[in-house]
Image (cartoon, rainbow, N blue to C red):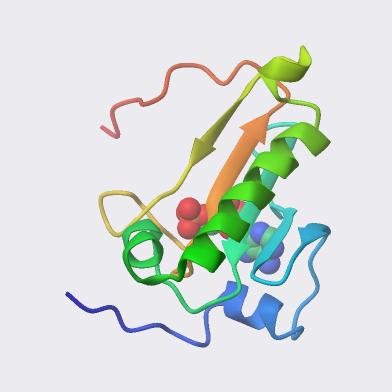
Length: 127
Ligand code: AMP
């Protein structure tokens, strides 16, 4: 199993500072920024700084330090955006699309964090 990472993808360009982003939080290994076409009042993307294509690539091949940093940053975003139910807020959904069936558009691993409205059922049929 191997993945080829496309260094020209838009999130790689964001990480290199070639195009702007609306940063929410940045750490040593992770960047979180607002989605350019938000599908809910809160729509933040969390990405590792390393060259990982999707969730399974990251989860299987990233270092424990990268994984811990990514996961903790995503958790901090939920609280910072006031959508964490444990803080009395209304809740959220995390999504990560992979490959053709996942309908992934950008081939750099990212976690969508969505909230601020009722999000409906998890999946609808595509047809
Ligand atoms: P996916 O379909 O899971 O690959 O989602 C890609 C997401 O990236 C979409 O929600 C886009 O709106 C978002 N996106 C694409 N380009 C940018 C950008 N330059 N800045 C922020 N978000 C972006």
